Image 1 (spheres, rainbow, N blue to C red):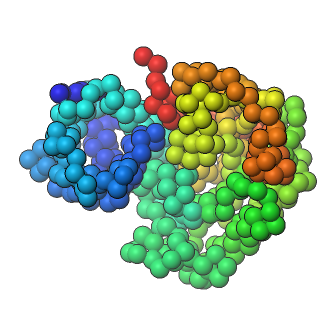
Image 2 (cartoon, rainbow, N blue to C red):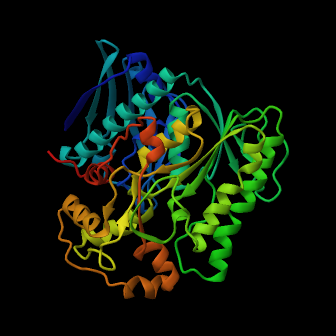
Image 3 (cartoon, rainbow, N blue to C red):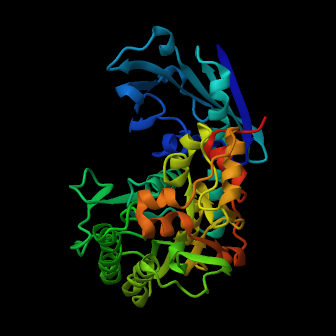
Length: 451
C-alpha cells in the first residue's frame, strides 16, 4: 500500500532538511499516544541506523538508504529487522521517503511517502501530528532568530523527565547544544556528572544558560517521607546550583528554573491569579516559594533568573492525561469531587515555548505563569476529554475516592483544589500560544483530529 501525506511549512528548504538531520528530530516527531520509544537515534540521514523500542520487548531497526539520499530534497529509511521476537514478514515491508520541495517565498512542501501494508487510517493521525510539530517548531525557532537569538550552549537538569526530554529535543533540533547534567557518570562530552548536594565548581563553565527542571514527583500520599522528598529534591539543589552559576567566570547569563502554580495555594476559589498575587501558606506553596527563593545567589550575581510556574501539563506520555486517558477510553471517566474546581492547564509544546522564550527574551525575568489563557473547570475538562475520545463522561468520582488513594492532604493538593491562573507576564509581551484551548490540545496530544 502506498500512503502520501503532504503540507507546506513556512521555512526555506535548507532549514527544513537540516532540522530533520539534527539530534532530537525523532523525539519531536514521535506521536505521544504511540507506545514507541527511541533506543538509539540515527547519526546520519544518509546511512545511519535507528533502533526503536516497541511493546512486548520488540525492537524496530530502521536504516537510512544511501541511494535515496539527495539533500536537501529527500532522504529514505526502511525497516531492516525486528527482534528479539519475530513479526510477520509483511510488517517488515516499510519504506518511508521524506521529500522536500521548494515552493517559493521561503516555503517548503513536505511530503511523507510510505510503502507499507499498514492501513492509512492508522497512519494519518501520525502524519498530521508530525507535520504540525515540524511547522510549529520551525516557527518558534524563526521567531527566536528574529528576536536576535543565536546558537547557545544550555545545561539542563531533569533531562530524562517528561518535560526535560522534550525540551532537550526541541533545543537540539533548533541548532543549540544541550549539556545534560546527570546524576551518574557522564557518557561523552554532552553530559556532565552532577551531584545535586555537592556540585562541582566547574559544572557550568562554558555554558550560556541553565534550564533547571529536576525535582521529585509530587504525586502520591503526603507522608512525611514524601514531603521530605519533594522539598529536599528542590530547595537545596537549586540553591547550590545557583551558587555555582554565580561563581562561574565563564558560566551562564540566564538561569531558568522550574516552579509551579502550587505557589498560590491549594484552592483559591474564584480568585483570578497573576504573578503579582499573594502566595499560599500550605505545604506545597511554602516549598515552591522556597524553591524560587533558592535561585537568589544567581540573581544577586547579575544573572537573569526566571521561574516557570507550571500548570497541569497536557501530554499523553505523562501527568494527569496519561492517568485519565485509559479511564475515559473505557467509558468510566467523569468529573472529580464535584467538578467545580478550576484546572489551569498547559499544552506541553506551549510549555517548551515558554522555557525557550525565557532563555532568549530579556523581558522574561522573575516568575512567569506557564498556563493557557483559558483555564477550565474540572467538569468541563472531563466533558472535553470524553468528547475527544468519543466516550461518555457519566461516572463522577466523589472526593472520598481520591482521599482513599492519596490521603486527605494529597487529594486536596492534587485533585480537589484548584486555581484560576492567568499568564499575565506572557500576555504583556504578546506571547502567542500554539494551542490555547483545551480541545485543540487534547486532540493534538492524543491524535484525535477532526476530519
